[in-house]
Image 1 (cartoon, one colour):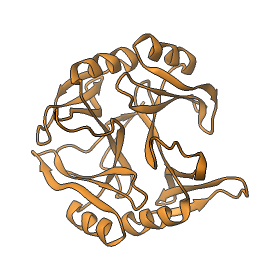
Image 2 (spheres, rainbow, N blue to C red):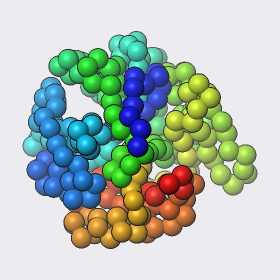
Image 3 (cartoon, rainbow, N blue to C red):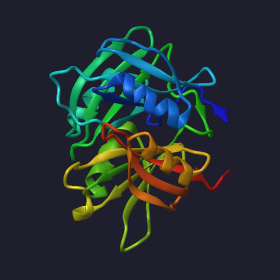
Image 4 (cartoon, rainbow, N blue to C red):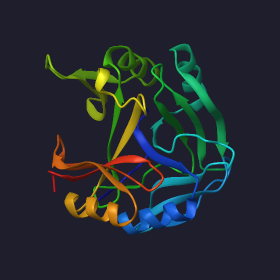
Length: 257
């Protein structure tokens, strides 16, 4: 288990989920990942931070009753200046939906979408640096963007966040890796017509678990669903699942364990 410090700009630094049933969602993730919860900034409505061993892991907020928005995990990418990043998003063909705005003394945030429509966040840290622990059960381990094709979208993230890119050398696979200071930080996967029609382009968060098969079974016991059963993946044995409100995420037991 490692603890995080301030994140380099362009690095995924936090994940957040907006739901309709905040209490029931807390119960689900507490039982699945062992999370405990404490209050967080309330600028966008009721919001809690998930904790492991007293360290911040992720955020969960309640959607307004009149807002029928997709329930999805959203990664936040670190920025030294959220206002400058918001302008870059607009100038590069993206859309800013929320912000920039202050989240109390925690930091400054933006919620935006890239030119293909995938939603992501921007976080300028102040008192809150982001996810504070990694490498143990219930912590975010990776983020992947599922989109139509990588060329245009990859250039967007390069221009906005300064990512370098590494293309997978395969005629059958449209995939590239986003790099920060030569370190892989996320994957972009161009799926073409295989992209789920009901969801469109979207970011997918992957959480570390002690045992993928056991965790997938637990998801079902708690009222969620297994979308893709446990299988070998690039980082280890993984499964794609969703919580009772339909938020899709990946669970993986890392090969590095």
